[in-house]
Amino acid sequence: MKILTGNSNKNLSSKIAKYLKEKLVNSNIRKFKDGEIYVEINENIRGNNIFFIQSVSSPANDNLMEMLLCIDALKRSSAKNITAVIPYFGYARQDRKVVPRTSISAKLVSNLITQAGADRVVTVDLHAGQIQGFFDIPVDNLFTTPLFARHIKKKIKSKNIICVAPDVGGVERSRALGRILNVGLAIVDKRRPKPGQSQVMNVIGDVKGKTCIIVDDIIDSGGTIVNAAKALKQRGAKDVYVYISHGVLSGDAVKSIKNSPIKKLVITDTINNENKVRSAKNIEILSISNLMGEAIRRISNSTSVSFLFK
Image 1: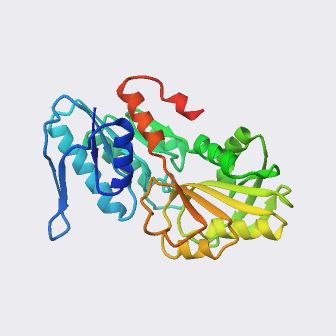
Image 2: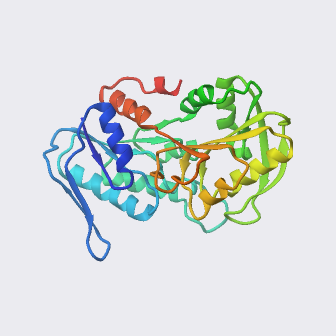
């Protein structure tokens, strides 16, 4: 087994390598002056099982192209098996045609990764579970729910907790966390007047006097989560905590969260946000390196990965 990292999230890759007690493959990944990406593997990988780690985070197009070129380079270097480890699978929000004449980008990206030469994909909390079916190769979709549950049990001492889905699409995720914590479920009914904006219409469930835990897979501009937190506080919630798998945090998202009623936002390090959130005292980064490292170890040893979902 050998581990190669792209440039999108070297901090996470280093933590995963440390967990596995492995060194990162020596490589040279850089850009020409016109922006074209150059990839060179500087050590022999013939016959090895290679795990290539890269998030499709901002700049998404550059990081995606870098991933494809690295997989191609590994294939041409006679790697035995190539596993694309994608902590944050970008373009996953476009998984179907909501309106006419649009691209299904999640399917296109899946095809590109497969055609580049990947033999397997490991990712975390896909935006839509059916994206696994877009691939014709094995996909291991890891869940952050057990990780979040352990953190909540350790950090939040309230005995009056309720899990909250920020929209109808997040009910399954919130219910799964609620089942582990043995607590109830509430749902925020929202509408989108236009892309990138959300409006809370109603809160389904009794949140008065309760510690609310909102759980979701992605926080981008932060509008949906901030509006949901405000709606919960208006309906008598005691405190609002938010647990998110992927902190995209584009634009003024960090500023909005700092000034919101959210007591604590917990995100994982699938996207490198250390510099971005340093000034926000109510944002905490929870590392997912051990979970991903253990998944890589089990895949390399051909043992069960489903144990990690418990």
